[in-house]
Length: 410
Image (tube, rainbow, N blue to C red; front, side, top):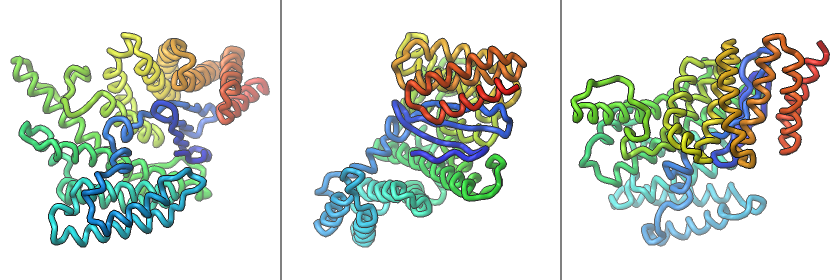
């Protein structure tokens, strides 16, 4: 999922293990390109993508619905150059309308049944592939309403109370996790629509929080964060009570203390996605703590040399370095850069480590340039450009080359 870069806007490109998120932040001429790998929260941890791609055995559906699903699948589940997305969304929508009509008399096909909400997720995915973000938002919102209802959408604490209930049905718990994935997806889609609107604008200032879409994205990222953090906090304090230890408002961010309902991937991915959003709007006071807590959760795997954790940590450090650069905390930026580079060099063939290596090398050039060390900055920019060229990252190469030209022209 790629959005073009404009002055002061963000480019989100997701690929490799998690996908890649690039950001250009701030208006300074010392703008730092961040090439980082995001955690594919929906695909890896909450199963939301799979949920939208396979939403139940065919025999769950009435025969009239199955025919429409087959027609939709024939149009959608094909190589991209042979897809007929308008036909797919037409057939899937007809199937959903028919299911909703049947569900009025048969609770088995009610609006919140998994095979029904899965179809809603599929329709949202098709609209997203079509680039129709308005209808994608409409469908993701509909999906949340079906699972959570008005009260659940309004107050995330309702979901926390459910998740903390040991007698909660497994199916209901899975529904909440799907809703969490959907809310994250809804936030991303609002974010994408805001970026699209910004690119159509003549304004060149960075996106701010005044846009209705940006505010909506913020709302849903915060909804996700509250569900995870409040559940985590309550679970952690229950453990503290059991051990006669004092209560705290902040969990330990140790994988051993996570509620079973969440995995390390779920929490770190959510923290990363929300942090990247806040950072893109210069709200580093929110972004930095989230990135640091994600690092805490990855630390045991990183310390043991687990490749995935090592490279994810280097990615997070590249974001932390960028935040420090943007807030003029150059010594702190330098520390994150050196720590991140040390990790990235451990697995140079890993695409995530390689991407973060390029970003961190460029960041180091920015730090040196800001400190008036032009020769040292030029070395880093040149190195970043060379590595970017070797891996066919034309955009990173162009940015590093432009920075190198700026240094040599002084």
